[in-house]
Length: 303
Image (spheres, rainbow, N blue to C red):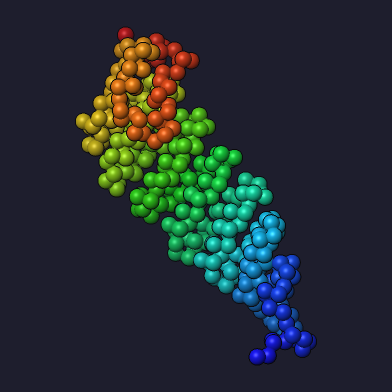
């Protein structure tokens, strides 16, 4: 068979024969108009950029690979090929975590999500945000929390509460690690409401007990008591073992204000060990030595 020739009559190289840099230049040329091509060839450009990105990545040139995949995404976008554009931007986010700033990584994740939504795959977009959040849950926890919250909101707005559960758990881990105990408690209360929509009663009860534990760990007995009162109106929580443990904990803080009594309640309550890891660990440490138990008791209305 004959080898394809270019405009000059010379045999044209296939993409596998070209280096990553040559492929990048080919993609750039395909994005431009010429005297004989009045419209950019976005499809050919995207193919060249994608191959360039793969070759850059194989050679460890991560930043160059990221930029190549970004150009590929933009070319696919020009062709209204939103699905492939989304996958390209998601690849950019994966690469960005090792060679770019946090803001750039977040931006790529958001652009990928937007492209997935445009392709009619909003759930995949939310999953992309959640995956990218995991890239930075330790190095950039604030950014990770923003992405997780966005993923949760997207899924719940689409009435897909069941898929939000893992992101609630991931978010609670990030917040507890940052010692943002009040925000972690609020997240668990929200998770409980989400569980109500899916009928996940067991997870709902654990979420509410976790919220109480997080607030007590923060030294906020009044907040823990108020949260307990609010969730006691939820049928799945009323009469449960988790409610019993929460009540005993609050009673020990309010009426006894004694570290030994609080520790006895924690040690005797198996339900606390079944909570998500950050809350189970927090429960084991109750009460914290730095907390003034008598002052907490008085604020809660104890004697």
